[in-house]
Length: 470
Image 1 (cartoon, rainbow, N blue to C red):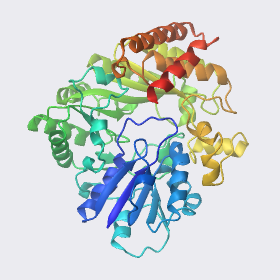
Image 2 (tube, one colour):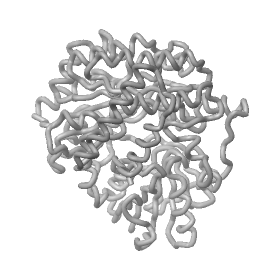
Image 3 (cartoon, rainbow, N blue to C red):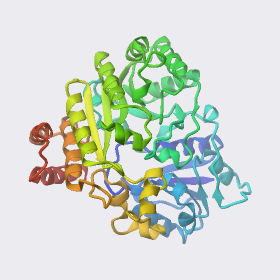
């Protein structure tokens, strides 16, 4: 069977990562003998492609406008259309009007059954957890533009601290996160059951992928890489045993830095095996806000995580959220002060946003119940107007915010100081790099003073950023 897997264009023009979900689906289908092609609409249009027997489209909320356009085009085609991904998982009935099947959650097993012609009892395919230990090795080459991603520069500061020229790919060694953060999409799409590939499989696949694509760096994109610390240690020992000559990074919780999990011996092992960066969801400098989020740790644990990373020369790429529903202006100021305090650690990097109401999560449901937020009732409503920005924009003035202008600007300038959206290494021209550094210097001055008024530099930098990503 000829299969076309489609990734719609997102509204923000960000396209740093290859479509790993589609690559996993395509690898499963290819292993069963089907001919698979992945189309990324950031680079080419579906209209220019020959229709396949089966078309799969996976999309996020920020990709709904283009997904709506593509699904509308497909309604008149003879192809069997399967929709999946985060947004269809959240709103399957809305998407079903445009597809033959909607898959909730993970799609490898379902799309393989549909391709085989198996009878499915329902057009909405309920969640089914995939046995990831037995998934085939990801064939990244199904995306015929994969070299564009391999050689593409990331905004991550690690890009300036790894072997050059940097060649990288994302890799998924586990799925699911057992924690129940009140703002997180994992809690509402059912992705809370932790499942991991064995350490031996991870070491084997990482070695093959690194050799096949001549990688210098591997990004572990697991939701929670460190749930099973014994597995992590075995992976590190395995990397060292096979002589895997790549650096790598992963995501981690702040409360894992204790004597049982990320103690000094384990941090030393991680560093020796090639770890250069941990992404830490610190989220806030306010105990009250962390409680609202159901994070399960305190700001002091966040600082300890950053300090330990700094001791071992590991970048602490830390995320923060302002304007969580229920926050006070004092909570927000505590977070700004906390970020400024963490700047004392040279390996600390900040990325801040205002709270994005991911559909169906607990905090978003409370906003709907209080009437402070309305949810679009159809795919068409999601695709037009301001719904996408309201739900997904990184900095945005939203109805429930207690200090909307201050928070939007604070999030912007805190992130800008760390160059977390555009680093000098991504800019080819000397003039552009000079401009970027000048804007970062102004942001540093603003953050130390806590002064976010008269933000003409914000408007100018946003224009500078748009021109770069276009």
